[in-house]
Amino acid sequence: MMPRRVLRIVILLAVLGISWLTKNQRGMPPGGGAPAVTDSGAAASRVGPAAETWGHLDSLPDHFARHGADFGARNADDYAAQAASFRLRAKAEGLPAKRDTDGSLRIYDPATGAFGAYNANGTTRTYFKPGSVDYFERQPGVIVDLRTGP
Image (cartoon, helix red, strand yellow):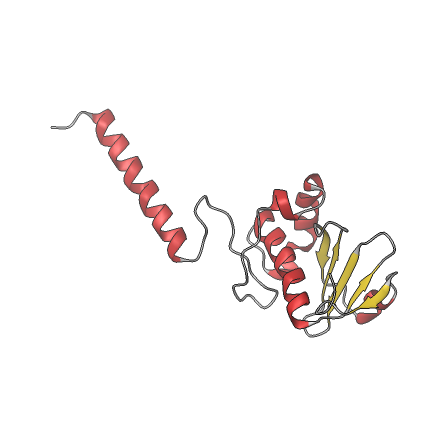
C-alpha cells in the first residue's frame, strides 16, 4: 500500500494535470493567462499579460470593478486582454479613432458602444461603454485611419 503522503502528491499532480489540460482545451494559454477576447466575445489574436498591456497596473483593479461587467469580463486579466484585443480589432476593422498630440489613441465602436483609450506606447488607459457616440466626439485629437497608420 502507498504511504498517505505519496498518495496525496499523486492526487495533487493528477488534479493539476487535468486542470492544465482543461484550460488548454478551452483556448487558454499555458500558465493560466486569459485568452484574448474581442468585444463580441470571439477569440482574437493573442495579447500579452495585463502587466504588458495595461498602462498603470495599479489602476487595473478599479477599472475592472467599474467597467468589467460592460464586457462580461471574468476577472481583471480577462478585462485587460479584452481591452488590448479591442485595440487590435480596431486597427483591423478601421474603427473610428482619434490620435492626440501626446500620441494617445482613443477608439470607439459604434456597433457595440465600446470605447478604449490607449497610451502612446499602446498600453491601455481605460476601456468601457460610455453610452453614446457624443463621448467619443468630445474627446481631443484628430481622426486617424488605423488601417493605414500606427
